[in-house]
Image (cartoon, rainbow, N blue to C red):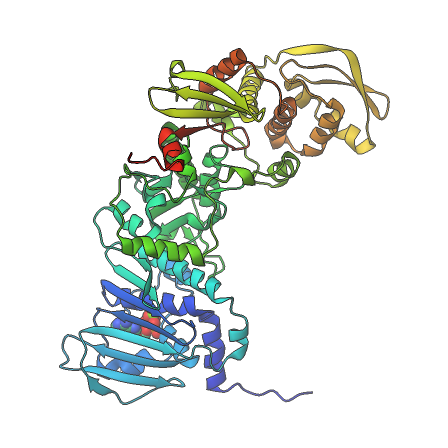
Length: 613
Ligand code: ADP
Ligand code: MG
């Protein structure tokens, strides 16, 4: 047997440090939190070209008294008298009083600090966790922490770091979250004298958000607020023009701390389904103040994921708030929205300084770019189908379901039509797909995707018929016979009622054969056999999935029904526009792609450099 050794203190510290300090971003998070805890309202973070060379964080907070400095850098020492509430445990990684000691163990530190009471500032050097005597220097009240040679003694950790640009991305994310959750603190992050982020103190939250997330986001945010006895909610949610390919613009702050909650994220995404492109995520900044008692702590601390004990209520409230805010504010995208570099003179936010613009460019260059409205990136139908139905987050829009309670509440409300159709004059159909209309009065061209538009119309028509249990059907002259596997046969038998609700009447013949004589009128399905087999494979078992099954089949049917490239006459084009304009959700097809887009005259002028002529 091998001998068991006790680990040295040094090793223990190093292991502990490794758990807290994963990367440069976690150093910055700890040091900025300390500065905020010390009442700083200005914090500057300077990164060196090679991130691990030096990080310098200066604040104008209370400073650390000379007599306290040793304690500050020792493990499990904290001056913070706050009781450690559940939420603190979750969101502070659960290691209080360890950050400085841990950082000092994996780097060379220097600290210059002055309290208001002291005549001098002092400069301390911390090596291998040991703090030097301290020499008086000249400096204002506050603290500057300099962290050098990061991970010099933990080569493994160093090896597992990402590329510099990824680590910078992490840092910016961490600082964004800290800045968004501290409206009264100005945080400046720079590298090589170039600003990466500069949050500004402002009473107006939108302006504050604007300084952190930029104009494109801020100008498309819709604010709302809601108070109950148990919560206070303040939210800024993106309109339907704002979405991202990744979920990194979904910000949630609970009691002033950045956290993640899968249930809240899911509830909000649900509202955006079919308003933003498939597989894109909404953008929002949500502040919730809640009694910590209502938060579940039984979660992984480092993920900072929380669970709320009476979640259902909160998620339901949120869902409704977002829905209420979002529905009336839907907008038709214009070509200027697609062109993310374009400036919009009517933006409700201040104009940018050159400084800020260059900062944005810089960030854009360094970060993977989130496409805004990349139509070209829409996946081919087959692949999209798999994704749409394959995941468990199936977009289930209650208003599309027959006979559900939710549906009653969401029964189509008064809806203003988005367009004055009489202003639109048919021009042409291009590429056998896009119908162009001109609106002379407002100087714009409307481009309608005939495929997406038709799909939306059919979908709503069909779903209404299903809701009203009045699906119009047609008898087929040539009945369709389909041979099934025993499993498929079982699935069909178990879901006969679902199919009938959809206007599809399979008759069972023997062990493995069915015949279909009656199908929905509106749904002209080319390859019915394939459609039917696909639909069987979409089915789930269980009592509660009935509506979901109907919904899935319905979507499948709508998609199969429409052919791209069909010839559309002028009359048909007008009819299509008219009917689309009357739809409940006119701007997107059931899969979330846009059905129509405005191209402003200005966009043409820009292209031909006629602007300002
Ligand atoms: P904690 O923040 O949990 O107390 P830390 O190791 O992060 O543990 O910091 C230890 C102590 O050092 C803090 O409690 C605080 O008193 C002091 N301190 C750290 N950073 C600063 C700062 N920027 N300004 C003033 N005091 C600081
Ligand atoms: Mg701390």
